[in-house]
Length: 332
Image (cartoon, rainbow, N blue to C red):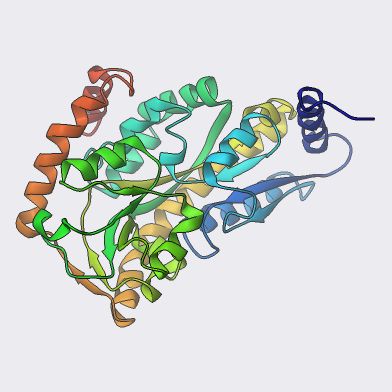
């Protein structure tokens, strides 16, 4: 008997919910992880999985699938929304297309420190974005990985000024805010999925990319990149999302265990960043990467990006007042 796709998808979703439901038997959840094992996504995921298992007396566990085994990061949002995937850890810019207000956290130079990132994600701003993401995307943010600022790497030359940047082919995620930021700096970047990035750098299809130190190390980008520029335009946040369908199918005690495990994993991620980033930076330098700072405290980069990019995205993030509220929460 041939089953139409329109019939099959709801059946698969229902099956996923049944498998995840916390009935008399143990439930095993699947978690997609975009990065390889060893980065902050992995740290958040392993911390969450252990805490959640402990809180449910070992009755429930989470199987982890790193390095994009369960699909592209944006695909995992779709799959979680349909109830076909339980959890995913991914870069926040891959959530923004589904819930645009989250983009306020990726506007260039809004977040200026790790403490800023913590203040926003764990306060009223963060809760509003959680609620919006449930409404818009059908997924619930239950934890946050703090990965540090996205520094620029390339294989050709040291970059300290916008003039140095010109002529380089830079990979960016398929994210309008990030694309617009590079355009404000005078170049047209190359949007590319995360799973294709290492190969593109290796084959010199693109010259560079930007990611936090921890991600550069975990993905072994030092093997295909030579230079690092310490730009600080985006602080990389990587939420742990859960299918709202799957969450609502759980009993209250399991829902509570999920939320508590998410909070604990978030705290673990913040401490992990503070404890490891400087050593990772030193290790990359020891492996031959040359690290430089942008000229004049990044003044030109900041002026170009905030002037051109912030107004362009006021509407998508919910209005200029939303950005003003975020800046006020940060004391600016």
